[in-house]
Image 1: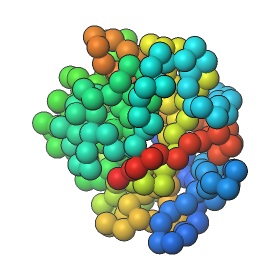
Image 2: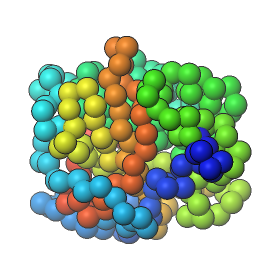
Image 3: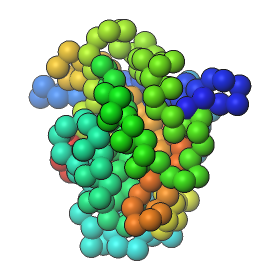
Image 4: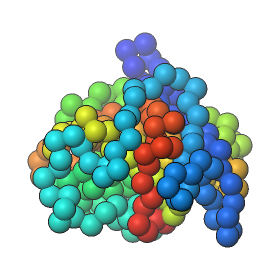
Length: 238
């Protein structure tokens, strides 16, 4: 994922920390809307505006959302390996809901420490990225070599962590189309096996429908305020 200057593009789009509180033993994002807790991540860099959408579908609709199940946040299973990502990609429908599930599976896979095995990284690189994804973004192995801790200090180096979507949020940019969808996600950190009461992260991904499946094109920095006001809770999570 190196740019033409020799540096990875990932530091430009890494998730920002979010304020959270604990209710009933689980992470709940601090800002609330309509009685439901929602995320309030902060952004350290400018981000494209994402207008809240109650239905969380693209402006053109995604064709079959009415018939698709709302995102669970765990479509490929509870594991965080290549098999999970590929299972989610294969099962995801051609809808904005399907794009959310694939983006979430990809996020859960990449955002963990220790980082995925070399063989899993190679498998995911060969299947998940769009043909239009820049090499500076799609070279996961190079990114992990340069940035072995993608949390960039949110979690201390060497401390095991991964993401939980149990109380997470998703949102689809209304400028999305049936075949190109921007998905914004907020999820909590699980640190040393325990859901953190203070740490969460947010990230956006652009996905393209090609060759009969959703593929990741690039990462984008989500707008924290609009995600807080328009985010939708996963129906399941893991």
